Image (tube, rainbow, N blue to C red; front, top):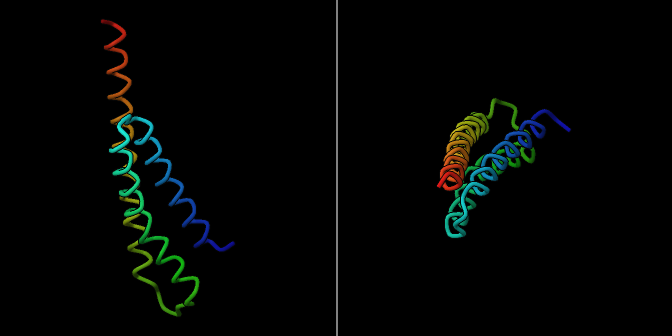
Length: 100
């Protein structure tokens, strides 16, 4: 397995884990559909360009692939931060309801 495939899989898994945290911290099924759609929007460019790069062996640097990785990493970081915030908010709300 090449480094590109490994890096793509790791990037997509981190994005998936970030969205799993978000989905587990929300209880609204309608919002979960929105989160799944946002996950697909974040994952699609990297998957498409990685598959394209493997199928068409480019001789020069594939700038689009690099930009797709940067986009996915930034998107993953933002999703992870949102997931942590939502998880902390849920935990705080549960602790407040137990006190009352």
